[in-house]
Amino acid sequence: MKEGNRSRDSIVEAARALTVATGWDGVRMGAVARAAGVSRQTVYNEFGSKAGLAEALARREVDRFVGAVRTLLRAHGDDVRAAAHATITHTLTEAAGDPLIKAVLTGSRGGSDDLLPYLTTRSDLVLTEATDALLEWADTVLPGADRAAVAFATDSVVRLVISHIVLPTAPVERTAAALADLAVYLLLHAVTQGAHTD
Image (tube, rainbow, N blue to C red):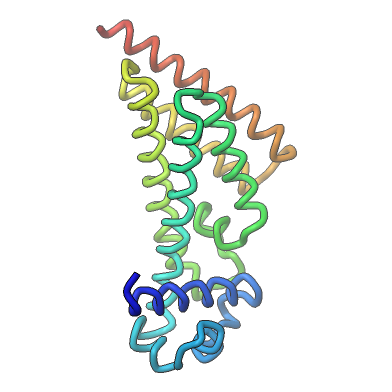
């Protein structure tokens, strides 16, 4: 990794840690610089302003979340239920324990008006990218499935997961199990639809 990239990454990681600890409103560029082990001027050179740092932080959260989704889906091969269950469990658990992930996924305030526009903008992006990751995985494990039915299934499951993040009604494990069962049902329906159109 190039020195500039390493410096940029360390600054974003420091900003993330400070945001989780104090809230975005309490984050100061000087504190980020100290935590990252760089000068305050370096932080400004890399991001231009606190708004630029917020944008980079939101982008990092999207990349981290979608990367984890892809890894979990791949880890379970063609076991549709296991992949759905692991991914849903991870998402519900991360959102419950990480205010930044929850804010990115739901577009919620997360305690900060200043960070909200970046997280809200990225919430649409993360939903699109997460759904795309599910579609790519489904294309691999359910190659004969009806594409429109798969798209409906993945979009529906993603939206239901988000609704359970916003307003949980049961423990994570119970919710994940029920949503995984629903995902299997919808995806198997997509396979049936695909068979009928052949």
